[in-house]
Structures are given as C-alpha cells and as structure tokens.
Length: 192
Image (cartoon, rainbow, N blue to C red; front, top):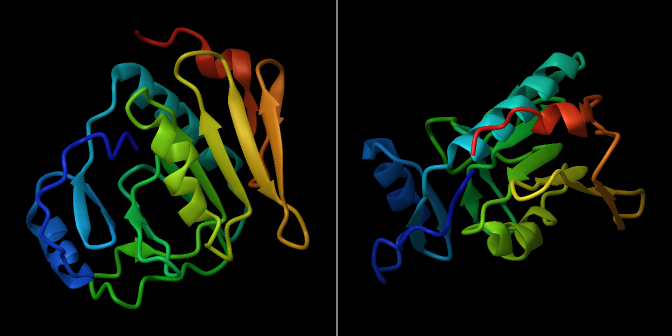
C-alpha cells in the first residue's frame, strides 16, 4: 500500500500492543517499526487500479491451499517486529497469525508480497521494507509494480535462500503463485 510518506505520529516509542490498540480504534491504517507508528497515505487512482488488477490476477490464479489478500491485510515480520500493509499478499499453506495479535488479524507467513511503487514510497519499498521482508522465512517472491512505466520487477527466493532478480517491461510475468500478469493488459486504460 502507499505508505510511510505520511508523517510519524510523534517521537514517543510505542509498544506493539499500543500500536494494535491504536489500529483498532483508528479509521486509517498505520505501519509499525521500532516503536514508531506511521500513518499510511492514500493511493492515487492509478495506484489503486494497478493494485486491484494485481489482486484480481492473484485471485483468478489461486491454487488450492492458497489465499490472496488485498491491501487491508496486515503483515508482521516476526524477526524485526515491522508491521505493514502490502498492496497484495498471498499465503500458500496454513495461515500463521501473529501470536502477539489477539484479534488474529495479522499474518506472518506470506508467500508472495506485491507493492505498487509510488513516488513517495518507492525508496522505502525498495530499501527498508525489502530488507525486512527478506527476513520472512515463508516469503518466496517480492513483486514491485511501477506506476511511472509499464514495468514489473520480481525478486524470487531460490533454494539456498539466494534472491534472483527479474525485470520485465513487455510480454508476461509468471509469478510463483501461478498468476500470469500480461504487462500490456495490466497497464491498459489506467487512470492518471
């Protein structure tokens, strides 16, 4: 989801329990990292259309035993404590909830994470967030979708834990989750 460009609530260090309580009572989504709560900025029409199309492709290709989620699904990296709301997520196998979240609304084992890049979030999505996501043992694929150009980038975890990078600007991208994303179709008739 379009995130971290929004302002930090304050310099107070919040516990994860305080963050969950704040999220429960808030009308907006927030990310959590190192005791800081960051409001997530809303996405543009273009961003939302791309995220919707990716989610639809994931759902259409969903295999038995896999569940696709849209941007309202919170993901927590247990190794670092960071909590985020990716634009799309898929879990293949049993869903593992966050043991620290009594509501059961946070997952910890996504197989696939998709982020639609925004000018305000691209650096975070490519840098800090990506560093955290790599710490999720179940994660097999991290996908970045550009708004500025017809481009999909995929990081795929190979046996042994090495990440392979692929970049596509035309044709189709086959995701591990089984979805084939036709780049021309994904970017056709997008709003500004």
